[in-house]
Each structure stands twice: as C-alpha cells, then as structure tokens.
Figure (cartoon, rainbow, N blue to C red):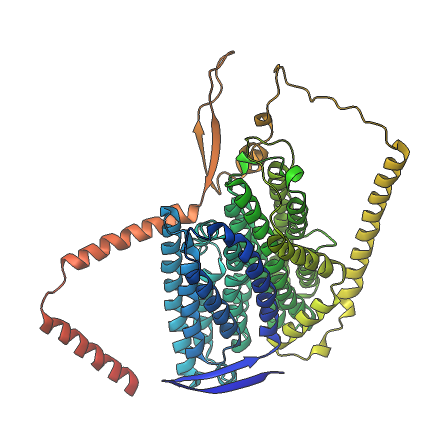
Length: 603
C-alpha cells in the first residue's frame, strides 16, 4: 500500500528515499489545499508592503517552507526527515519575523526558535534509540523491528515531548500564542493549519512504527487531549486579540486530535478494530478539517486587520455592514470550528464521539472510564467554542462600530481563497463519504489491519441520519423565515431604540465587550487561569470617568517557562564565570569525549 522513490544522496547514513502511503496522503491533501489558498491570498495581502519592504526573501522562504513540508511527510529516512525538519524550522522563523522592526515580533520568533530546537533535541534522542535498536535509518525497516518494551515506551515519551512542542500540546504550546499573531495572516493560517500538524504526523508515524504499547500510553494521550482541548478553549475565551484567540483555538483542536489518537490506540490495544479505526480515522479527518476551517478563520481575520489596522476585538464592531463577504465567510469558519452539523468540523468530531461511545460499552472498566471522560471533555469543548465564537462574531461583525474603524471587503485575490475554503467546509459537511473513506483507509493502515475489517456503514448510516435531520431542520427554519417575509410583505417595520438603562444618550461603547461577554465563564474557572483585573470599580452615585478590564494570562508561560528560562540564564552565567580559559583543557575535554564515544561504540 505504498510507493517508494529513491535517489542518490551523498550524505553519511542518509538515503534520499520518499514514500507515499495512506497515512501521509491525508497530510499531503491538507498541505496542498491550504498552501495554494494561502499563497493566492498572500499575493493580495502582501501588496500592502510593496515599495515598503523587500518581498523576495519572504517568497523564497515560503517556497522553501512548502518544499520541506512535502519532504517531511514523505521522507522514509531518519537523516532526510531531520534535515527537512530543521530547514522547516528555520524557514518558519524567517516567515514569522517578517515585520522584524517590531520588538514583539522579534520576541515571538526567538521563542519559536528556542522551543523548536529544544524539541529537535528530543527527536535526535528518539531517532538515535530507534536506529540503534533497528540497525537501520529507514522507516520501513525500523517498522519491522520488534522493540523491547522499555525502548518502545521511551521512544513514545520522547515523541510526545519532541513532536508535542510543534503540535502545541499544553503546556508545551508556549510558542503558539506568540508566533501566530506576529506573523502575516496567510503565514498564521499555514502555521495553525499545517505547521503544527507536522507534530501530529510525527506522532502518527511513531504509533505506526511501534505497534503495541502499554495501555497507559493510550490513557496519557487521552489525558493530553482533554487538558489541551479544555484549557485551550478556556484561554481563547479570555483573549482580546483576534489572532491570539484563534491561536489558542489551535491548542484546543490539537487536543481533539490527540483525543482521537488516544481512542485509536486504546482500541488497538484491546484488539477492537471498530474503535481503532474510528479513533485514528476521526483524528486524521480532523487534521484536514482543522486545516480548512482554521485557514479560513485566519484569512478572514487577516482581512479585518488589514482593513481596520487593528486586531483588538474591543475596538471593532459593525463590520458585517461594510464587509459582508468577509463576515459571511468568517461565519462559515466559526460554525465549522464549533462542530455544528452541516459543516466539516462536525464530521470528524462525530467519528471521535462515536469511537468514545463504542469504547464506553465495549472496553473494560478502566477504558470505559477514560472514554466517558473524553465524551464529557469533547462536549465541553464544543459548548465553550460556541460561546467563544458567538463573542467574536457578535462583537467584531454585529452591532455598531465602537470607534471610527471602517473597512470594506478586500480584492478578489483575497476573497477567492476564502470562498474555496468555505466551500470545502460545507462540501465535507454535507457529503462526507469521500473524506471518511480516505481517513478510514489511513486509520486501518496505522493500525495494520485490513480495510475490510470494519463495516463503513456502521458509522455512515447514523452520520447520514444526523446530516439529513439537520438539513431538514435548517430547511424548516428557512421556510418559516420566507413565510414571514411573504406575509409581512414590503411593510416598513417600526424601529425602536433599546432601553437606555437610565442614560439619556446611547453610545456604541455601551455594547458588550470581550471581557464582559466572557466574564461569567472566566470567573467560574479563574482558579485554572491567571485572571487579572486592571482599573478601578465604580464607587459613589456620581463616579468620575473610570475604566475596568480583565485579562487572562498563560499560566504555563508565567509559572513554568519564564522561571525555567531565568534559571537557565543564571546557570549559564555561572558556567561562563567559572569556565577554564586554557586551550589544553578544552583539548583534554574533547579527547575524553572521543574515548567515551569509542567505548560506547565497542559496547
């Protein structure tokens, strides 16, 4: 079920060998769709910088980035994979820091580079263990090796650490909320839709190679999915900047994918083909779906930011009147990411739900408990995502402008890619058979079982029923709307002002803000989030002009990584102060290290 291309490559231990199989085809589809759409969108988006900045380097790094993505998912050799991985990291860094005159952009690029290289260190250790045990650097030969349990578990944990940083598992997501807002919007779409999926691809490939793993590995993946998904959407709910909010929703959706992988691994361990394929297939379908709807949302956010010159949610409002196309397409992306029926996000989440419910009844007690936890978490993610995007769309596109910030729909070079992505969201949501078949094929390949071991109708029949009922319900609503319009005719409906709460004059600033809309939920979970208030409360019958706001800060950043980085700086200064300044000592260190390597090789 795979095709191999091998070319001569004069690199020690490296063979330029590419392999196409059902697993990487899913990622190649996601890459092709989003790279083309983001590239066309970028042509229109970057016109703003013509004559102000050189675009040659940006285009060059974009092409390098795309090429390395294709090599990573099709590489069949460890050295080739790591080489492409490192080139992807460096090219992504230069794409992120396009606006390098801003200090926040330079900081975001630095955080991304440090996090990525820490992850690469874990990957070096992981691949060294695998290659040393298998005696080969080729993935297809490594996959035929029977790994000792301790080695297999160590490889699995190193893959979660290394690939988890790129994927954005919480709390390893620290680079994500910095890099996404800093990059140009079409690059943000690629970072969220494709770049973080390289981490998911790496984990999928390792699961395919290792085969059988202890049950607790599946429970760990399920736990990572629950924590990343729930905390990601909670952090998103408390954000006030549009692209940063979308960045945290990437953490949430990576959690959903991890949940699916955990279900698949759990089913594989208990030799249940249906649960295995539902978990792996649902996770892989969500890889494609997330790339589509998150790409659409970032491109829509980029259009808003380019037109209004701000991404602050509380400064926007009423844009649906001046940007009708953008607002409609953003609505499609919002409905998709919330997992509502008739849109693509629902299809992949339905498969994962179905797998969790199957596990609830077919697995032993411990597996059933974790599946029930996954069901509750997935439902909670959907409800919170719906609340979050009600906030975003309601504040940004509905109501009245809060400030004199008006925009208009961008040119067709930016609209057409969004139309394509929105069309795919609806097409997969209404006619999911093609993508479900492809992802089921990849799921059976990952679990090394026959495609015919699972009856596709088991899931397609209830899925078709849900889609049909949803379509019927939507048709009924539209019919009632049209009937009302027909009965009312062209009569002018009376317009009345809203109650002013005692104020003599209404102001657009009296609408819901980002903080006030989400304050109930944020207050309820303030012990999980770092919620800070700034300003002063209203006091007295006739208060002076005051302001009060809240902000949500990343606990992983402030409580884990900042103290860790500070300690590393202190440690490095101590080492620098006590270093030996004699060449002979350095030569002795090198000699001792070479002896250690020789002894290691002989053993």
